[in-house]
Structures are given as C-alpha cells and as structure tokens.
Amino acid sequence: DKAGHKHFMAKEIAEQPRVLADAMAHYLRPEGGVVLPEPGIDFASIDRLTLVACGTAFYACNVAKYWFEQIARLPVEIDVASEFRYREPPVAPRSAALFVSQSGETADTLAALRYMQGKAETVLSVVNVTESSIARESDIALPILAGAEIGVASTKAFTCQLLVLGTLALEAARQRGTLGAEELARLEAGLRALPGLIHQGLTVEAECQRISRQLAEARDILFLGRGRMYPLALEGALKLKEISYIHAEAYASGELKHGPIALIDEHVPVVVIAPHDELFDKTVSNMQEVMARGGKVLLVTDAKGAEVAGEGVWEQIVLPEIDPFWAPVLYAVPAQMLAYHTAVSKGTDVDQPRNLAKSVTVE
Ligand code: M6R
View 1 (cartoon, rainbow, N blue to C red):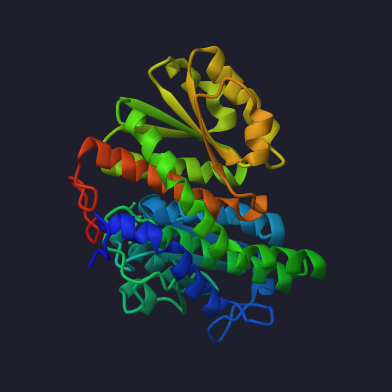
View 2 (cartoon, protein in one colour):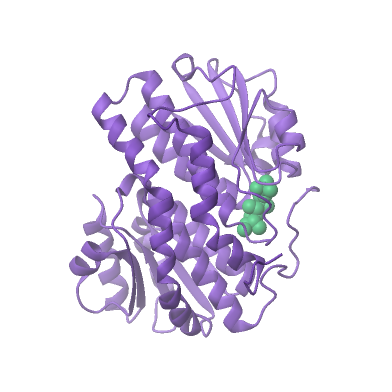
C-alpha cells in the first residue's frame, strides 16, 4: 500500500519523521538517557569498534565512524563486507564488531559477521528485519524499527540506522567518560529534535523537484562533502545512479584538486552537501574552484551557509538549522528527494530499478 504516494520510495521518504520518532521512543528514556537491550554493551571495555556493511548501510557506518571517534574517542574501522570477509583481517583484543543491514540477509555481511564470531568480544547488529539471519547470529541485535522498506533504494532504513548508531555513539561517550554531562545533554537534545527537523526538511520537496528536472539532463553529476558530510555525498551519488541511471560520483571535497576537478565544465552539475559547520569555509573555496571552471554548483546548506556562500551558485536547497553533529541525518532527505525526482523526470522504474534486488543474498 503506497498510502496515496506514486511510489513506495516517496512513501518511505515521507514516513521518516514518524519512524524516527518510533525508534527514538524505543532507545531514549523520556526523562533522559539511553536504553539498550539486555545484557547491554560495555563500551568502556573495548579499544576498537569494527563496522561492516554494504551499500547504503555502509555509508551509515561511515557517518558513525565520525560520531564514535569524535565524542567517544573510540577508534573505528569501517569496511564493505565483500572486502572485509576475504581480507581476513587480524582482530585486536578488546574489539567489538557491528554489522549494519536493513534486510539482515545480505550474503557478504552475514559472512563477515560469521568471520568475527569468536574473534570479537561482542558481535552486534543493527537491522530492520529482526527475524533475519544477521539478527539471529549476533550477540545483540538492535532493531531500527523503520517498518517494511519496499523500494529498492534504501531511504528510511538509512536514517533509522543513523539514529541507532548515533544513540550508541552517545552511550559510548557516556560510558567512556569522554564528554561532560552538559555536552552529553546538549547532544541528546539534538538527537531528540531530529524527527521534528526532518519533518520541516521535507518541505524542500518542491525545490528538489524543480532542480531535478535540470539534473535529469546531465550525463555525469559530482557530489562533494567534507567530514561527517562526506558519507552523505557518497549516499547521494549512490541513490542517484541506482534509480536514475545517471553517472554520479562522490568525493571528499578536499580531494577535488587531486583529480576530479579535471571533469568540471558547464555540463557537470556539482552537488555540494554542506551545512554551515566548522569546515564550511574550506568547502566554499572548493566551490569557488568549481565555479571558476564554469561548473554549476547546487549547494545544499542552511540559511547561514547560503548567506556566506554568496554569489555565483547555480542552485541552492536551504534546510532548517541543525546541530552540525546530527546534520547527516537531516541532509539525507534532499539527497533522497533529488534522486527520486530525477528518476521520476527520466521515467525510470523508481521502486524496482533495473539489475538490482532489494536484498542481495548471493555474492
Ligand atoms: O539489506 P542491506 O542493508 O544489507 O542491503 C545493503 C545494500 O544492498 C543496500 O543498502 C543497497 O545499497 C541499496 N539498494 C541502496 O539504496
């Protein structure tokens, strides 16, 4: 049932405020603090966390690496499951491993999990389907509570994965004593604000739709992001290529000069995903480099960023102001909508793109 939407993907994008609120009610106590399933997770007893997944779930792990390292000072290793499983990496003592999968049945992720059984202190999973193999075979399975996701392009599962991973990062920071009480409370309040902010964020849809008609004409599109927004550039490019079949590539903004800038001309739109955060000025100089070569910049930012970025930007999408720490969750919304409307403009099969399966159960 598409609940009045043209596609499951549109329905699933629109559902995000509600499912995020549901997941939050499950993991956060109304009076403050995090609730985890028994026997709980002892973050103070580990020195390393390994995050493994495929596709969009892997990009959620990329964001989580920034979160855990920044606030819990916990070294995080990330890898795609297909590389991790055959690399047979040595496992340091006092390590935990966490596998992220919407379906819980992805063959490579399951194989990577089995490799870590008996090697890591704890094997955790973050899954949507709680009866899945990955959930069953982990010591602790954390549900994302996104509800069934039908569209092949993952949307609400991504933001709910981020919510659960963000909650874990907060809990890790509390247990490890790496943040003061005030800072912890401030970040927890920011986390709680997410469903409301995503609800407001959905109002950029008309803008996304209008801009997407122009993106649909492009042959190649570049996505740039920096720091914790770099994974959002990766996710935006994946979403776009998967359903619109337009070639899209993502780079960390600072890598622009090291190669991809050679691609820039007036035919290549460059989507810059950059809230006004501590690295914004650096991103502005990258944008200027693109514009100086005739490149068309679509800047996805907030009101402050739009003001500072100034003249010369081709298009802008302006999102509500948010604590930059949690911005990756909100900025997923325009990334999803740009892909969705570009695909609709091109008339492709949005919910079941060619050559793709919802769950990749063979390698
Ligand atoms: O079910 P999983 O989360 O393990 O699936 C992983 C990827 O196959 C999946 O995220 C894929 O990249 C999506 N189609 C992206 O939209």
